[in-house]
Amino acid sequence: MEQDTAGLFDEPADYYPPSPPPTSQTYTLQSGKTITLHLVGHSPLEAHHLWNGSRIISKHFETHVSSVQGRTVLELGAGAGLPSIVCAILGAEKTVVTDYPDPDLVVNMKKNILGCELIPASHGDAEDSPIVADGYVWGADPAHLLAHLEPVKRDRFDVLILADLLFRHSEHRNMISTIEATLSRKKTSTAYVCFTSYRPWLQHKDLAFFDIARERGFVVEKFLEEKMDKAMFENDPGDEDVRKTVTGFTLRWPDEKCI
Image (cartoon, rainbow, N blue to C red; front, side, top):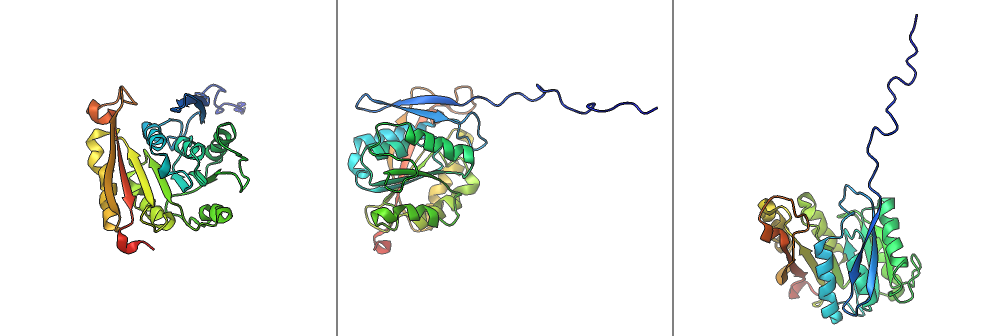
């Protein structure tokens, strides 16, 4: 007699732990006004964190408004998109905030844009909005990102932002290829790379990004170093001072490559 095996190999409804729910964090501008940022519940791309690099570069722009005001801005691997939102608030002419083209990530970036009342005349996907969100894979053809600049009659971006991306060592060359393809060839055009070596024993691999940038002809300069009150992941191993320190470098075109 055959036994009834229906459902024998079915997993109980509670077999897998539920995905963490979405969270939110706030960022306080120097004006005292706050930005609420929604984060996805979990992401293998680490977009469920509001990274220290994004906070520090946003603060830098607040104290150096002319570096973004009236300029075109592209952020790579943006997660919640804090630096891009700050740039839009500070008067950037056009900001394109990007992350991997996962629907949840892109929808979340749009949610943060639409939810920020401090952005002037923000209309989400509307091309006349000062800020739009889009999906992008580092190293891929950026034509759809550059197309967002058509309403402001620009062909490339004045400012690029890479905040806490350097731990993706295998993607360094793709990131730099994207900088090459999207950064306007002007003396004032700048890619801001802000990061912490969250795994201090691999800091040399983080810094290898800048060796590749120099090989590609970029002028690399350190512009920022700030120590946070505590490490972002307090229980992680490795030198705590390294894990608390946010460092910023700029990439610019050499004179002979400027147009």
